[in-house]
Length: 170
Image: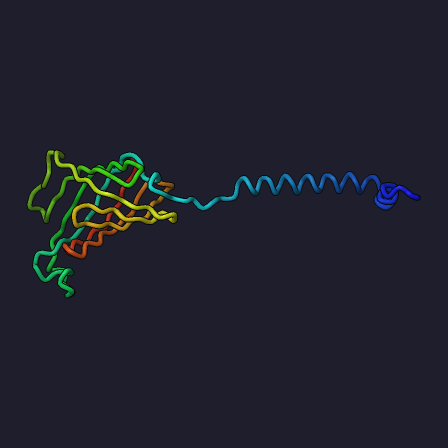
């Protein structure tokens, strides 16, 4: 009875075996490099927002009682400008506090001393989208730059306020 290894040795010359081994090792190294360097989808959760974020938004708020909450479209002349700068601090568990300064159509600064705190809650979906809620206000956001920024729009059906802004982690 012949040894099966002898058949394999005789059918593949020594030079080809060395080349085969080098090729298999090279493919293994390439596969390892690709596995390590492939970007992976980041799963987000409440802890993705943790710490302080600088906020700035521009908005329009209705100046009549027949705003979006009434179910009627209102012309731009039915709104007044609103601006905000703030500091939001997220606790990583679904709650936040904020200090903000507002300007309503150039009529003066509200909370100029930064003394009033807002509190609210937030949700985060695995894809990085979520919602901030405080008082009757709601903002839908998306987390960007690996958790270093938020882009949001305001959706306030009760107040008719239209908001668009962003936050940057400090």
